[in-house]
Length: 233
Ligand SMILES: NC(=O)C1=CN([C@@H]2O[C@H](COP(=O)(O)OP(=O)(O)OC[C@H]3O[C@@H](n4cnc5c(N)ncnc54)[C@H](OP(=O)(O)O)[C@@H]3O)[C@@H](O)[C@H]2O)C=CC1
Ligand SMILES: O=C(O)C1=N[C@H](C(=O)O)C[C@H](O)C1
Image (tube, rainbow, N blue to C red):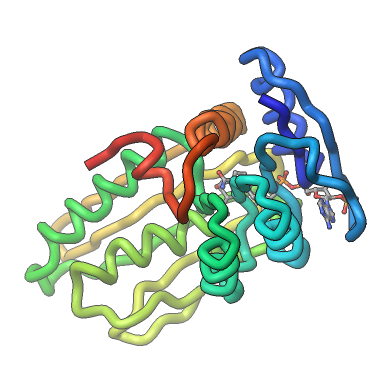
């Protein structure tokens, strides 16, 4: 498979290594703002760039009928436009806030627990995410996905970074050197607390998931997610 890497930073480099190990070829690497690259040699593009660059990169791929996998976070105000563009061009597109198998299992565990806790008003919910100090967005895309999973099953109406109202899920974002990504959901009552945590030990899981998604999307048309790729029910 011929892969274009849109974003050649920490994730782009981790993806390159795994892709080469799995017998793929990297035909394009874009690591800064450059609007006139030629994507047409690629079978698939993988975008791990910047919040400000992702939508433009995704649009370029879809307009040129190149399937695109995006892991960039912090650009979701344009997600619906990307979906429309994908449908208009009969393209193929996956966005995931987190490509690791472990986090996608954790997403399901989170919803299961939220359902169980939904009528137990003695527990207060809160969330914490910890990432490395170079991270540009807060809260993390994964924290937002986790909060959305909880909102489906509770009477909370929204998530909020830091200070939250009674109907909101508070998210605390911490930035500590070299932390690849840790997410915790806490239910606290006067007598006890229940906490679930996913801890990434490196970027390997994210990168492998992105390459697996790129392999999976070839020959498909439509907008998909990691639940489709991993066949999680
Ligand atoms: N979904 C998931 O599983 C994961 C998602 N992420 C997300 O992926 C994104 C990238 O993370 P990470 O690799 O750690 O970040 P980095 O900052 O290490 O890499 C981003 C790269 O994008 C480059 N870039 C700048 N402008 C453009 C452009 N217009 N087109 C393409 N590339 C460009 C940057 O170059 P320069 O430095 O010159 O500006 C930089 O090399 C973030 O949004 C992060 O949150 C990260 C890990 C997992
Ligand atoms: O920027 C990162 O590093 C990460 N970003 C993603 C996010 O915002 O959730 C995924 C992972 O946690 C690492």
